[in-house]
Amino acid sequence: MDAGHGWNAGAFQHHDRELGKHGRVVVQARLLFFVRPQRYTYEFMEKSEAFTLSFFAERYKPQLNFCGSRSGRETDKVDECGFTVRAAENGSVFFDEARLVLECRKLYFQDLDPANFVDDSLMKNYPQQDFHRMYIGEITRALIEA
Ligand SMILES: Cc1cc2nc3c(=O)[nH]c(=O)nc-3n(C[C@H](O)[C@H](O)[C@H](O)COP(=O)(O)O)c2cc1C
Image 1: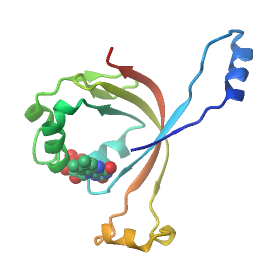
Image 2: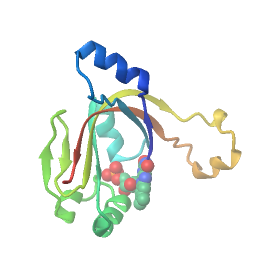
Image 3: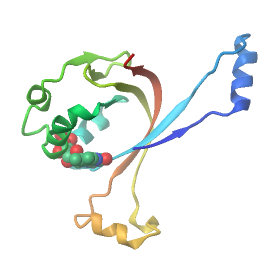
């Protein structure tokens, strides 16, 4: 995942003036991620404006490898992995076992355009022309394991 931050010192000062508060840091963070159109995940991304990203500790690697190699269309991955589903504030869901959860709001999407590949060798990743859809999400809430 590639992540970007949409903030700077000027933005902090602006918020301080606006809110009449000092010493409070307002962070507005956005992120990019990429999903191929044939993924079951893609269907959910298209149906909803809210989504979550769950990040797990190293000990969950076997479960993540399982989730990364099987489609949710053919198996109940949550059940197989023993994960606990919880309701997020943004209307989506997340996994209780994650060490970090980012609740996000969809801002923008765009399909990768092969005409814009600066390095032509990237085309070898797309023999079926199934170019990833890029989403930009605004992080509306972060849950961090204490
Ligand atoms: C380490 C790893 C990273 C992956 N990253 C992505 C990704 O960024 N985008 C994507 O579309 N698929 C990615 N995949 C492949 C999907 O996780 C895989 O196709 C999965 O079966 C899709 O499940 P779904 O059909 O339930 O969405 C990744 C797989 C692994 C193992």
